[in-house]
Image (cartoon, rainbow, N blue to C red; front, side):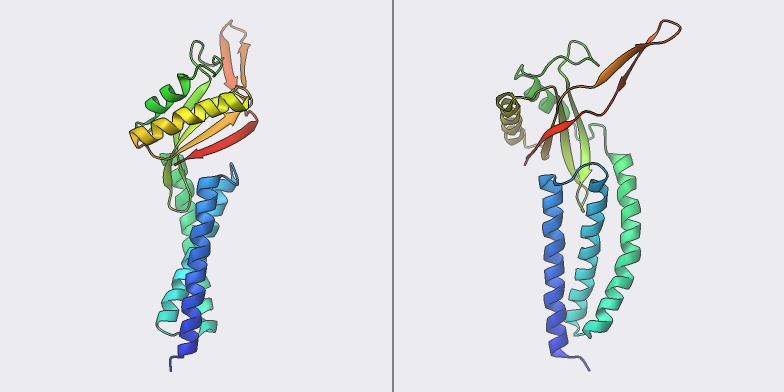
Length: 212
């Protein structure tokens, strides 16, 4: 026989878990608490909590017993989260990188027009600036990622952020993540046949600003 008390407990626990999952996803996606490999790990944690919360909520609505409900929730959440993690990593490789939204040229110009970005060693004559598309968070939301190299002063950084913010509002682009790096790490070496080769190395990330 269904237990009304068990049902209410399931509903409450399910709603709480769903709220926690969505809140954590918002924090990880919008506020960049972590970078690099951790950005692949935490969306799966949010998804795991979300699935458990959804199963517990449904079980609470049908007044299932809490003990058995948690067992079923974990039984469903573990394999589905594994599949989600594989899907998430695959989508990062397939969908992340190129300007698939077509919004980078305008963002590039909005940052470059400030004239505070040093010249690129990789592409002489152009600012040390790049733009690409990323997918972040549990729902794989699109973000424009703008990388700025060699701008370390707070005032100069703010000029770039202000210009990008104004362009974001005017053009109604997807959210923008601005990544300020200490410098552009680009090394040029000469081969035995006289040809020159260039290669980039990771640079220190000094500031991240989210717009939108």
